[in-house]
Length: 99
Image (cartoon, one colour):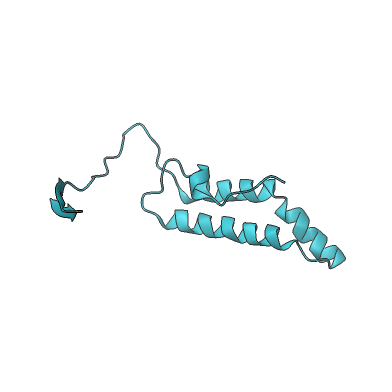
């Protein structure tokens, strides 16, 4: 049990306990990596990298930065224990703004 005093008020709280549901299949690392690949594919990162390799013109900086953010988000999600069931929610991933 934990006691917290907030703005001259007092509150008793119990820590939340994780109770796995028997029906759900746990999320594995491959699921998160597949979601990251899907998001990178939607950005057409491979096409941008191919274009950069062939023509020598650099990939736009905003695409490069967004790809790094997606890879970082995937790495952070993989390190969580347990990985959240809603790992594919936009809450965990960088925002992609439409132009």
